[in-house]
Length: 139
Length: 229
Image (cartoon, rainbow over all chains, first blue to last red; front, top):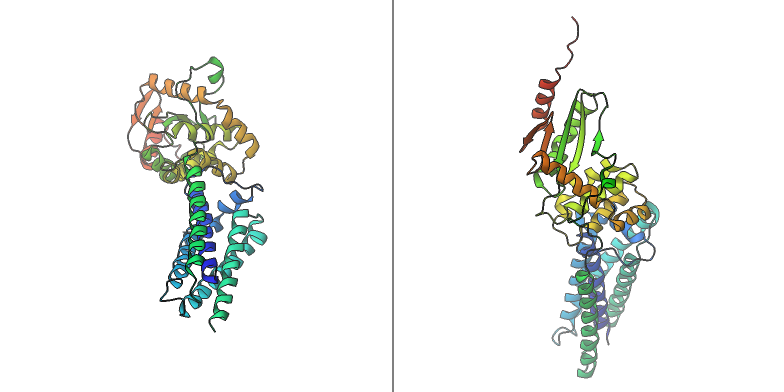
């Protein structure tokens, strides 16, 4: 598998994680599977929305975009192009910055950790790393 | 850097496996039954109503008492609770002129009314009926369309500061189902057929009300003391 394949798989996993949190937030799923109990605290806090939009919905859109770019970059006509790697790096970089902000809120403002959010943080950092490796590869 | 056909096949296999697992897990979560249900066909026992005649706020010495029969899932009740009650509270209840009694009247067509009423009853055990009551009404648009209202009520319970272990035990027991049914039957016997309905001095008032109408009603029943000139 090359870096774009890895990015596609990771972004699909991230998409499902975000969808799970979003379905919980809109009341379509019962309690969250979260051993610490911190997930509910985080998900029901005022910081579970950003600029009036559910953070999990932002996650769904972000991961869907990353998935689409990674898949587009795998098409034969695009594999040698540099733009998919650049766009992946830009999107994932934005995601990492947003995740740093959210993790700061969890640790120092809400004082609760949501395992699913940690999972998403690991995924977005992994995506960013793959995007950077992909960029280096196409230098 | 084009991937070989074998590499692409392996990639699509992994992608497909992730998709199947992800969709499967989400589908399983979506299809799980609601965590709590409060039965409507309970037989009311004397112990269900012993000493309980609704949730009351206001002074014992208030000149007027209004009993409200309401349904948490009824949109008019929601509008009344969120838009009119704060003014009624400030203008009449906190000034000692009016005592408010809230009684459950869960309508058949509303699947979450009884769970909502039970959630508020469980909050009452911890002295937080009114915060939970207000939160449930505020969030009506959120839970009325949801798949598991009970879970949203639990979230509200957390927000208003309830002890969740006690709250969960109370909800699972369904211990107030009889009391809710008793309230419904009592309302029906008094002639209540829709919500919200107000019972004031033996007379029923049905329909939409605003805080000005309630103020006029209280004024007519207990004229305000005029200050001496």
